Length: 307
Image (cartoon, rainbow, N blue to C red; front, side, top):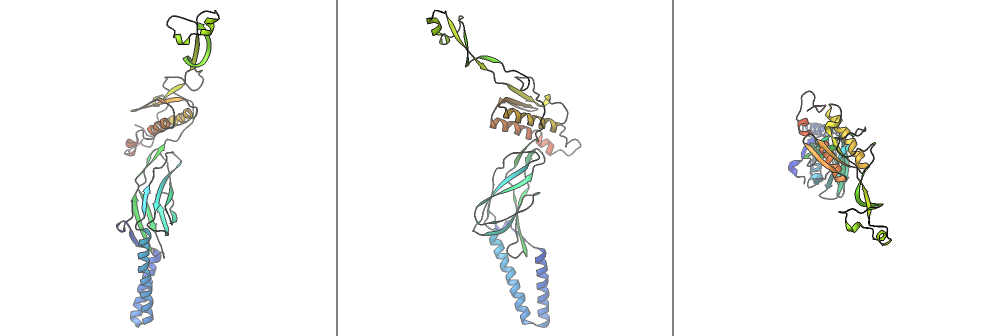
């Protein structure tokens, strides 16, 4: 996105209004007393003000703004929106960038820069700032040149994680208090056992047969990987936001322990798996759960997320 003259508005500042009032008073006095020196001073100051407007436009016109994708955050953290700024010419000075409701960021841009604009993420969902305001008071501070650009990207805000005991829908193994089970596989050698019709001949212990011990097969076992299905309905309580926060905390712990897990929400289900991509999809499901209904809800109970 490139700034054009049509996108930039100009307003006098408080100092600018005072300057104009003084300039008009000097002009009236010069006319009243027919003072040539007064006329020269008025036209000199007025000409400087007009030239400053030209330089102010040149300071902003042609600047390229690109919104980069922000990383997801948890509710209560600060969402960082990367904004790539490329000036038309070197030496773009005293420009203010404001992404409400955060404090403005004053920078002088002599080359391409990536600004990190932070906004507090108070609630889960999709944080989408309304506009990025670019302002400049260069060079004399008499006029404010401003442009409001729509933000082209949003930041995904996960629920605030709440620690607590694990609860699942009763499918698979639990993470706490359960011993992993073993199944037949090819991971660990457990010993020899008597051959039975139907066993694979590839597992026959030929060494034992050559020693006259009889026909045995090699027995291998593999440990079952514990997994669990995290279910919205298995979390006690009626408050939706609390349930989502508890599920968020369980997902983080399960991922840290390298445990396979799935997620079941009303209208959303994710099969058990592991990894960063799986964690993101599960947390995204929590973040956007009932998001549109909650955004359009203005009645009592909306804050608690009651469906």
